[in-house]
Each structure stands twice: as C-alpha cells, then as structure tokens.
Image (cartoon, rainbow, N blue to C red; front, side, top):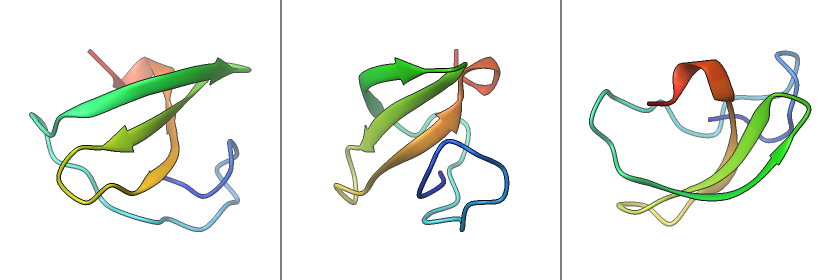
Length: 50
C-alpha cells in the first residue's frame, strides 16, 4: 500500500493475500483503500486486488 497513486510513492504498509481492505475510491487504475487491521489508508494498484 502506497502513500500516493504512483510506484514512486513510499510504501506505507505491505499487504498479504487475504488482508481485508475497505475500498474508498478509484483513481487512474489505483484504488484508495483502508486496511481493516491497522486502519492505514493508502493506494493499491487495482490489478492486484481481487
């Protein structure tokens, strides 16, 4: 999960398969999400989500 919707942005948290996320919105192929376990909010490339 990254701070902004670009691969150049710092990684905020590493997610594992099965981690639960709340989808907040989509921007240019990226999805703004909130991790349920930590509450952290950031961006994940949409192609990586199931």
